[in-house]
Length: 626
Image 1 (cartoon, rainbow, N blue to C red):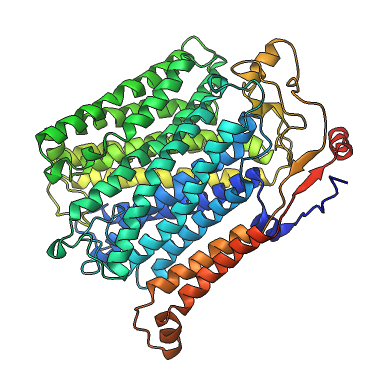
Image 2: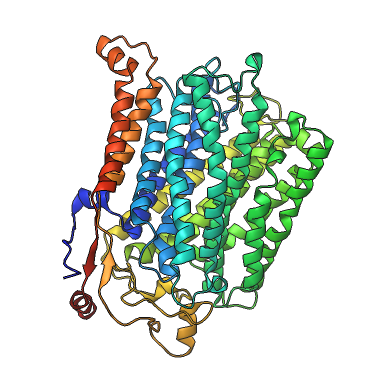
């Protein structure tokens, strides 16, 4: 009776609160990241409306600072990164022929930590104001003396969310190393899996740095420490080093998975094997390594000296080489192929020239003498958005349309999709291309208004119209999703004539992914079987019972506990106009209760041994014949 464990299955809301299935967690990441993306996008629209006209009073200076801070923080930490994790969760186990990730329970913990950390950060709007020190939270601006209570939410919210991201990164490293199907060597892995592997390694080394920085800032703000207080022997440049040791690899944590998505889509729709696969793999690894060697290029203007500036300048320019390899290989893949255009391939094609423009201005900023001129101008804003939005967001939207059938079993509407691409593409370039010129003409960044008749009026107006057009595109994508959800789940298993393993199983993927683990016999494993006339993958094992992990509410309760503890620590020294609140917060009762919930949840996880359950052969055969 080895397979007689009780099967735990929930429905409705409990199903989503307790799930440890990587595909459902991928959908949760997509919903969570999507909500924060809409929020960050709305904040961007507010910023652009404020800057639409000179001396506009749509927002006051304080509110503008909060909106600006929350836009950057939300987009970087809570929107694009979780959407990357959505694709990693939904696709990587399928691409490597695995039934799940290595640690399903930890995977669920990672999602709930991210979501509740992000929620903690955003409820700051309703509790004494949002963070207002910029998304980089430079000290001394982020100290108690110059910033409001919102920075406490930044510090604690990002720490909780960061634990989730670190757990996710470790999980994917172990999954990719240990759970690949027989025959899938490292040099047969799809590019998206490769870029996610390098990204996970970057997360492993970069996130501890920002965690240490946030802990130091937390002690500075909540417990009167002096790490960054110059008068007490601290050093404000220390924060910049810590932040950018994390912050620059973070750019590659974000962009490398987008490179992987573009590689998959370009190869599929060109009907060709990816040109220079090996070179693409080594270029990815080299970009990841060099990503750690260049953080000082964010600090040229802090006065680190000519030798330091020169070393980091050269290291920065070197990144153009492996990046250039990728660009040329995508073009060579398309060249001579039969590239067909739909929404996914349009976003992929639009990515290439847009990202190249961001890369070129990056090389310009890598020269310290030039950087001194550009540094605090809108030129940097334009460069940053050409890389992050023009690169990453284009890649994510391409991936969204490409893998939507596999995730949800439905095909997105192509007419609405192409409309959303063109409005986004045109709106993006209207918004950010002109900001290069605004920067060169002297418009500083981080200002909430500007004087009229300085030559900045027209370009700011055009930039805002472009941002509104991107908003129209986003609404079109939401309409497309809503329209699609009303259709039956009738997407074919392989709608794009794909080349990798995820297209060898039904859409959406069944609970156990693969009825039998496939045998991988080469790069583009599914395509290799197709050209030999086979309609499905050759199995690597006989049909047998499949072990599945049990759902659990504990990842959710662990995260809820930290969410409550965060409030408790933030308001421990707050002067409430209520004796009861003063007592429970002032004596750390709220903070202690939150930590207790987390610790009890961890204890329960340790004490009760859960064997999971099995899907028996009879049930598998029944599903196949149904």
